[in-house]
Image 1: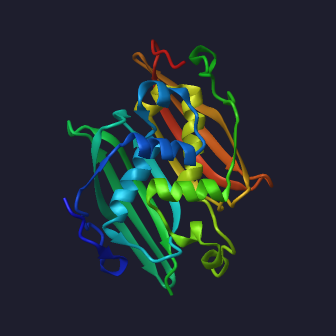
Image 2 (image 1 turned 120 degrees about the horizontal axis):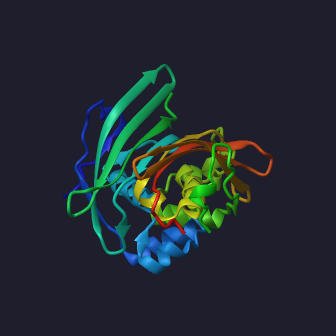
Length: 135
Length: 145
């Protein structure tokens, strides 16, 4: 599934992004754990992927289809962890625009994200909000 | 080290976590997550913004909250946890972030205990960086160690 790229200005509430697949490669997970300085044994011993790594990779997959202006700031994050993910799994990120608020110089975008595994079970669900540096 | 579910009550403090944020960690996170927003990785760009310098990705600092919860609740957090976080101030390179939290509510229903917690991440000046509420469902017969 190829992500169609869309600019922020063209987004409207209800817009659904093309589902984006991503793989939980061992190298990607190791790089993530190094970046967040997390040595929790459960990840090493059981090949479990931290749910926050799943969230980060899902947002990365989403970002290939969304062009946000430089200087965009992440202001809030809601997440729910459901099925555990393990190294090697292939997941799919589904996202839609929940809200787009523009009041003068205040621009805020809220996106709902659901990540499913190959059995179509929910791995994580969540909502993320950004403030955009627009004039 | 997981906590003992039987010893939990409202107001129980959870074990503190400290992490130092470095520009290297931020750069590694950008590569790992594919988020190359220049406010995180380009000091010259970031200097020109109201932020005045590079800042860590909010999700990088939020990962400390998840590690904090994993330390206390183990696998129960990974399969039955939820969080609602507000990013209050940016974390900057060389900041030391301390994660503290306490149980605010416990509800037992059937064989499951729902534990609610308030979590606060502060920098070395004591300024709130993330304010977060978490919930985790733990089966009373579950080994969270």
